[in-house]
Length: 171
Image (cartoon, rainbow, N blue to C red; front, top):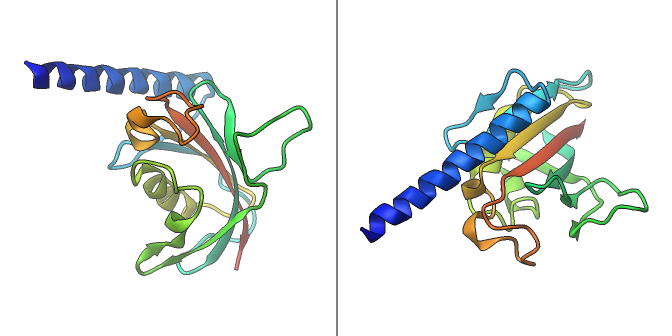
């Protein structure tokens, strides 16, 4: 019985996450939307018109991360004076795709997340992009902070997360 109740709760959370993500996709006219094996969803809003992102490139990106309520909690973009980020960074991230994977997984972008979903979605999206483009990544709560919230307990447990990512430079 205990396992059944736990499984039902997980299914309810998964269903709620799916509805939240689908509503965001519909409300923002995202099309096409791709789903990774882990369940992360992403949409390339703009491919970009600069240099193509290829394997073994050194890539610099800007990103902004939002919680389920649309509040920015982390960004490499300097905010307007009226904005506050829970985890300010303000410097673009630079990483490389190597034969062993993206070095991005060792940056602050991934430091507190529960799984590989964001890494997987960024990997799939960026190789189809150029500098100047933008991709939106939507993570179900199980791929974000899950039941444990963020380290500061500001973001609600089971919050769907959204990341807007733009490649700036390719070397």
